[in-house]
Image 1 (tube, rainbow, N blue to C red):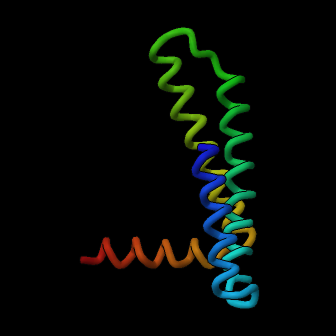
Image 2 (tube, rainbow, N blue to C red; image 1 turned 90 degrees about the vertical axis):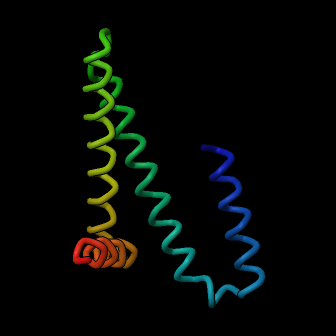
Length: 100
């Protein structure tokens, strides 16, 4: 939501002021990468939603699932292409929880 985005920017700014710009450089890059991937994901999901029919409940469900999948796929592709360390950490975390 817009309120969450504004709050995240304010908190990032406050953290940067407290820790200094050198300490938060990696965090800023990570947030920027995630934000860009999210915007692309939103655009793709929105385009899919507009392109697919949704006149029945089943079509609406299929539309939602395809749009969500396309948006998630776009997000993951951007994170892989940019070499996001967050993605590697997430995969490692999921791998550890599955091995239990």
